[in-house]
Image 1 (cartoon, rainbow, N blue to C red):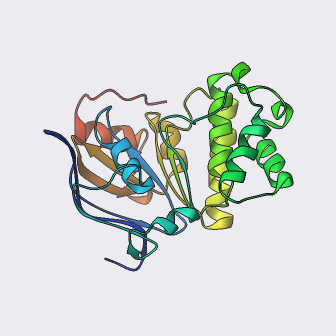
Image 2 (image 1 turned 180 degrees about the vertical axis):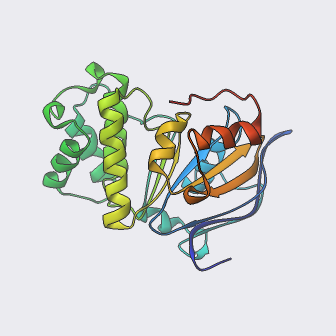
Image 3 (image 1 turned 135 degrees about the vertical axis):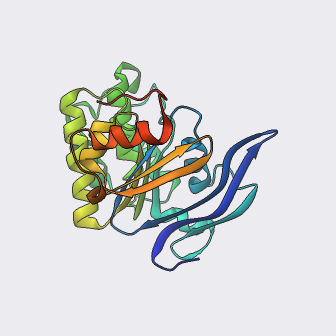
Length: 241
């Protein structure tokens, strides 16, 4: 364990029966940085996020959160959007957030409204979620993840379904959270151009193994992240943006 890391994987392996989803992964995330997690479908990204969130446990190895071996209470300081937001389609955006807030012992209607405005749903807070587009549901999922002012934010494909204006607004929101609140953010996306604009470091994973971890300042030239991806993983599908 290294105390400078807010999230740390130490030789983490995870297996689903005979398939190895993560293979002896070592990873450290520092406070106040944005990390881009990149890899093809089935590379192990979602499994990594599920382990951080506590939805599954490592088959072997250790997870440290906030400098201590994994503890349930640590996740009270974290926010998650993994795979897709779990929403009640018959409830409004505000009601969905209010419900989650009550479950977690959080009661602040004013903050809920501010968050909905912040993610671009201010005009839709009384609208039933069943009428939402995919992008609007993603925005609501991110607002829910931000409810408790997390020190660590884990986002699995948060740009999914967003239009270009929404992607730019989300990039600005996440950058502000990192810079002003020192929130540590780890985000997966197939849109390399957006990740290259947003993240401070990039973690490349393939077939359950971390194949590279690169600081943004180490990248140079046009489409540098795309070139690194192709160098490390060949012709695996990716959306360059």
